[in-house]
Length: 226
Picture (tube, rainbow, N blue to C red):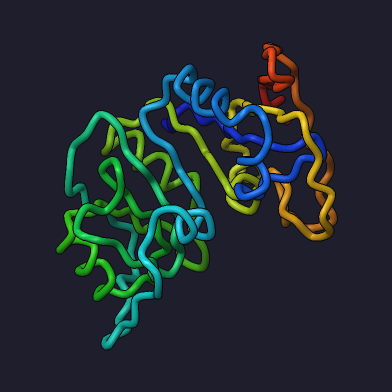
């Protein structure tokens, strides 16, 4: 498969929880961004929930005409050295004229409305539509590598999108900045979350450990091939 080298990079508490409002209160925030830079990726990818909290405008897109694209396709609005990528299956997030801090790519399913794609086009936001019933992550990654030139990609949350990439066999590496603290609240999302109960554990191979004076630990694992 001609895809980017894909690393899941997260900051978690000792119990694996990733709520940003919680982790930003713990030591390790500075190291999180430093370690992300050290991974030398050319794009970062977030799930819809994370993007809605941190990047997109309030509200959701309302289509007047819901005619679906109904085919695999992409639009490259901007060629860039670095991209922000957001997974938005049905196409509902709202964006200002600037899109994001870096040129933005939105990944949707093929049932996205043509009207929403026109909305993205008007804002010079690139998009990839891939997958009939749900997003075909593997197919989208091939387009991302071939058409946008992304060679190294960091998945930066949340738990559902991290787990989706893991379950699809697309992750090459796991990078965890472990903060010296515990969340402990019931029901809070973990770094990988939401997979069916019949899944077996995913084996990892420890490749590097870095410790910091503030108590944070950077753990890097290679994902074992099944």
